[in-house]
Image 1 (cartoon, rainbow, N blue to C red):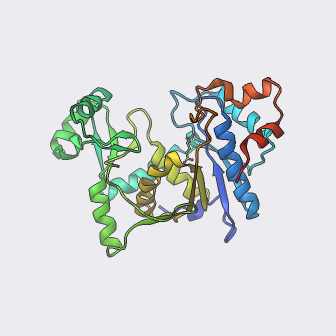
Image 2: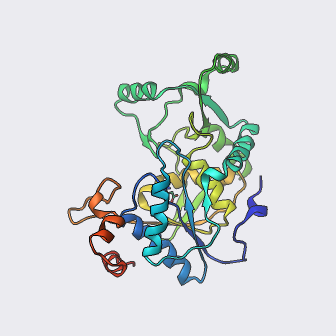
Image 3: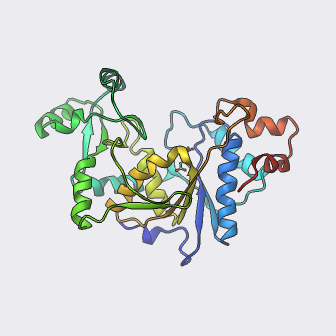
Length: 297
Ligand code: GLU
């Protein structure tokens, strides 16, 4: 699978950044910071700024929140390239990437329920924490092929997980042991460390993809060269580099910025309704007030 034929932006050398919100709630001031950060990075480099709607989680996403994203960002004075990519329109791209990994025998079905996962995490006091919560202990990795087939034939629902050990062995072989790295504009070159990542889910039981897979496919297909996002997603970048390498996608540069915090040091979250852009606007704030509050570096 090669994204090169699908690039949304392919001007040689142009910086392409993106803001990729999920319409699961109203944007807050922390989102405004992320969006303005990405837009400013593109503007400084005379590059392109993209907006992407990350709406694969159909149970949690709402059209009203998507409408609000556009309203809020326009109010802030941001402008982005069109068409806007909406993940729910590109499930076939994620399926093709999965197929590729499946053919390379790097995926396995996981039948564990949330309850199973919680029980296992509770039982192991020292269970390491990864990008998706407790690291998966690998229960279904060792099921035999007939056991898997029997469960699937019996109608059991399953997620698809990346066999991380197998994937790393594959990469070691292909790269003659050159360590896999990524470049963060704040932290410098970082060696990918997957201790504590475990076998991440690439297709959920309820959705034929996952955050990790969709984001990697989209960034490649849209020609994103500079991924700017909050430092809470730094651990996910280790997983994303592995996926990029396995799928033969280009390596973007990263900038994981600090998260904006309120006066008590708490990070802004969707539930802090007082800090939503919609509520600030209704309370009489002007876009210039938000720009002044945020103070981009
Ligand atoms: N959709 C993610 C979020 O709203 C951001 C993904 C990313 O920037 O990689 O947190």
